[in-house]
Length: 118
Image 1: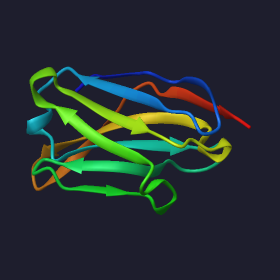
Image 2 (image 1 turned 90 degrees about the vertical axis):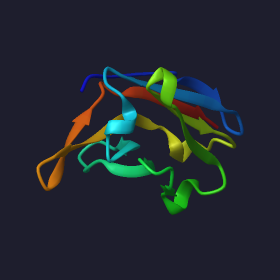
Image 3 (image 1 turned 135 degrees about the vertical axis):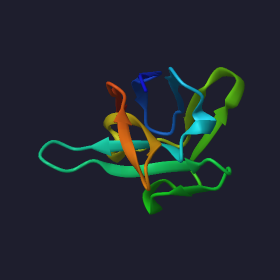
């Protein structure tokens, strides 16, 4: 699966951005799609995830501010980010969990930079 992330940029605190992740395959074939962040020297952390059935989960730090959604016809997943804070600054990575055998394989997009100024 190839994932193309876009929509990052520079925004002031309190502003909004919408990230997009376009997949080369049907996202309904994936166990789940998600967005992760990675700070320098740290592992990637889950921000938001949407399962095949539509259930969602979020990191505590973004609950009530971020919303993950998808357009199945466009094979695209979105992350609407509102009320952005400087601490949201990071590289955001799109993730797909593709079924493989009894488990799944993770695929990653190239990352898109989000910078929130105070």
